[in-house]
Picture 1 (cartoon, rainbow, N blue to C red):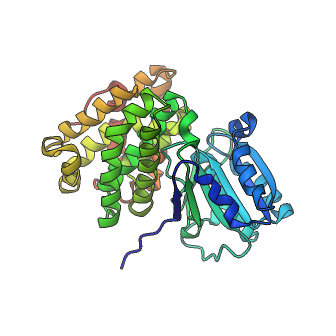
Picture 2 (cartoon, rainbow, N blue to C red; picture 1 turned 45 degrees about the vertical axis):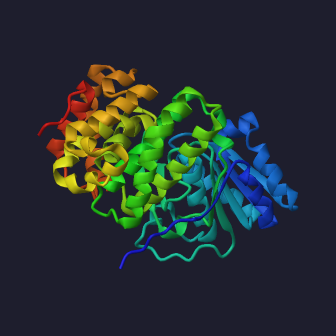
Length: 385
Ligand SMILES: [Fe+2]
């Protein structure tokens, strides 16, 4: 017996209007610092106030969010006693919102207890709404929250089914102001979710269907959304594709590309989408011998010839990366010297080895494999072993 879980989804340009229909009394809005600074969150605050809600804004979420930020948010929630908690922003803001929601509902727990092994009945005080303003992380649909222990510290990969939002609101007007680089980074993350989940050991007919459509939409529309951010049709398509890919990996897990990417992100400070994106061609090549039939499910959207062997599939990814200006090697990302990379290898391997992302990877990587994958991705050399 398997379960397929996700939030209820409201979608369409302007769909933040849905918030007023929830008739909240007190709402806590958690959002990215840059959104709060720019005033971009005001549109959401206005919708919440339409039905008379008092709104408290906690707008101090930065990339690679710290556990300390969650604890601040829990304290605010304890004072405000919201009946609606809303996460607005990219993956960091939505991840922090999940943890704030859980610990507000269950003040007896610590962040470290947000694991599937702990029984928790959430939703007694508040509903949880997630509103992505980028198109890629899929955090609005998933039960995972990635937090950082302290500045430069380890990433905690926490998860619980009760952290899935009641509603995800996909308003495609929100990502329309993303600059091209952020559109590319976050879109690459979405493609990684779709491709890694289709080759996962836990893939299933429902996740496969969503992965396939997400791959189709991203190959077709991500270059258009990067080239012209004002292309509303491409923006909307990529926004929904990201959520489809989120639903897929939320139910089927990602793979070694994310294990490598999380390590690179936390040790050498590369943004998530860029960090996982650079590894996707190498993850495909490494996994292909163990997941040939699973990758073949992409034939209807990429064509038979693209899924015949590892090199052809990874070439399609590299081609797309070139079109959207994504790096195809770590060296190309820039800002990391060969010496710094070499010195970081032991730590990178340890972190990738400990990542829960390899749990359902079709080919179990040894520490030696991980080291070779890091070195190959630095040089830009395809994997043929
Ligand atoms: Fe991701």
